[in-house]
Image (cartoon, rainbow, N blue to C red; front, side):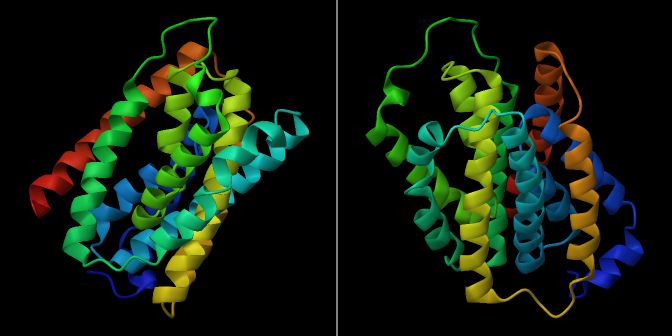
Length: 256
């Protein structure tokens, strides 16, 4: 267990480079990187405060950067985005206030990572038809709220669940989905992180958070500049899914 972030930085300085890589790959594939940060940190520490806070902060930094760039590219549509986040924000805040023991948290995290890994590895079936159900406002409100609450409890933004769902149902173009998902992650991470910090604080040492934030903002800027083909994005999602799957299985084995 690491009680001081400076100790983790001293013993694992390579974590900064890995976070930069995670942010780059996730941004290129249209995600914020929450599951990647959680997967890595959970292997280095069992300290829930450090794991959840770092994941929240990095998610906010990456998706904030991505959202600004998507706005510049004119991908963002408030009309398409607001139904997903109206209930997600308060539900994520409530999820962030949920108190859990470290063992229970790591067990839940393992299960969530397994589901996230499967969603990452699924391949959408090409189709010109969109899902009618996901165009209904009440469905978007309900699903946004459920994903937001789970995201708040675990310490992510929830885009790892929303984005694959939207891709699998051909809800909108990949660019529109990336934009909606980035904003969804951003507001949920802000809400969930606020709820968690108000309930638990952030600790007394912020050195790790600072260095990781600098690393992921660089990764986000680089990742959103990459012009990957759809095949390239699928490969990134699949490789990331395999890695997340292995970590999820390990957490369940260790804490089950």
